Amino acid sequence: MAITQDVSDLFSLDDGIYGKSILNNSSIKTFCINFWTIAKNSDIIIFMKNTIIIFDMDGTILNTLEDLTDSCNYILQKYNYPLRTIEEIRSFVGNGIPKLIERAFGNCANCDLLKTATKEFIEYYEEHSTIKTSPYEGIIELIKKLKSDGFVIAVNTNKIETAAIDLCDKYFPNLFDIISGSKEGLPPKPAPDGIFEILKKANISQDNAIFIGDSDVDLQTGFNANLEVIGVSWGFKGYEFLKQQGAKYIAQTTSELYEHIITITNK
Image (cartoon, rainbow, N blue to C red; front, top):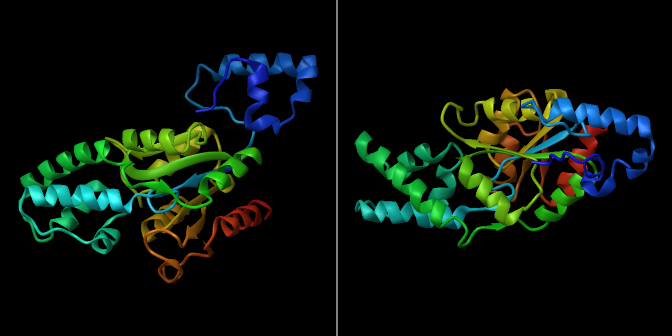
């Protein structure tokens, strides 16, 4: 979260993209000091750019599939259920951990077992979520470029929010302004509530927001929030699947993704 009580720091965000020279204008400096006095006591984060790029996490910025598979199979083995292949887990992810566990256990009708397995999966995965996980090629450079361009950068994921924050801290330190993940009281994607939470914190309208994801759940989330949506083909579902699900924009590389973002923001 990019917040500072020092005016010079405030205007040097994003490598000075907004112009440190304005600090020489004493009237503007006085306004900013007064503005900060109000803003720092509110729940709204004040940004100097009014366009936000919201990323999904799994399959979009991070390849988490192997660690998710290994964690699922640890729980399945513990309860003597058949192990799942990585391709099976690929087809199960996207709707949050409870649904992932339900699908992995197959025809299990024991609700208490599924609840226990879900809890144990979360605990195990949080301790083993960075063994094989890594950012997709070019994604760190893309996010840095977007920040230098002045965009606000956020994550909206069905992953447990504490785990999402930890992963962002490890792989994308200081790159994300807002992180919204699964937590009590917040419906999972494709419900748009997480996006609305992000937009409220950023004080940015839906008209100035773009959502990026790799799955049908992500597309539907963006559509439900009435945002422009870009699909990425390098994740868990692929180009043809996203096209069939109604994606207007699909990026096959991070360079294409950047081009789509600029095209949309220049409309």
